[in-house]
Image (cartoon, rainbow, N blue to C red; front, side):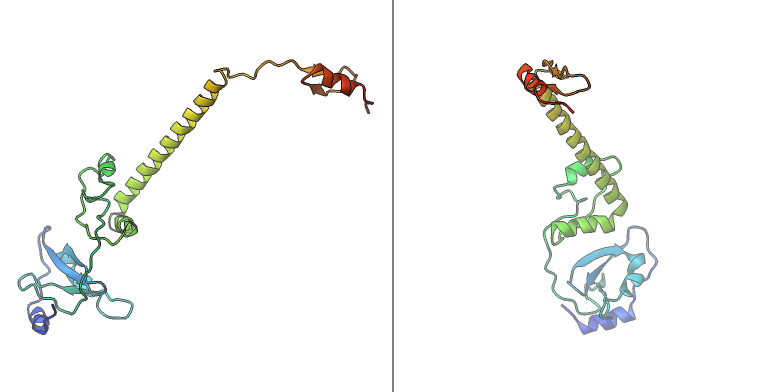
Length: 196
């Protein structure tokens, strides 16, 4: 895939950095070979980024020749889409949230569900925050609904009576004693014992 002539051609014909809003260029990660589209205005800055080992983080794909300006590994992509992609399991839920309807991300080759969430969190941080807030609110509403249903079921099992049942109470008749019992026999046994 790498062609040394492409590097020389790239160096001789650097892309111009003036573009309209819709102009995109393809860059490729030198770590995993993943291609991605960025606005052409970001190209110069992006190509200056370095990996921890000091090597360039991205290669540039010349739009006219399709050649890369440096060697990259072969990309082995995942199959998990971004949360904000129509192929995502979360897509329908996100479209029901005010402020998120219609927003779409083209990423469909993320490695795992964790990567999809991190992608959404880092690349779409405001929208991710809105989504997480809406999900948390919905979960709290569901919890409250379950709690209310549980309370209603317990009250129904208790006969719908919300006050304590009226059982007879037998209070000790010895002066100064405040003990009470649920049966007359219990009170009689207690009264037969010495009181302090």
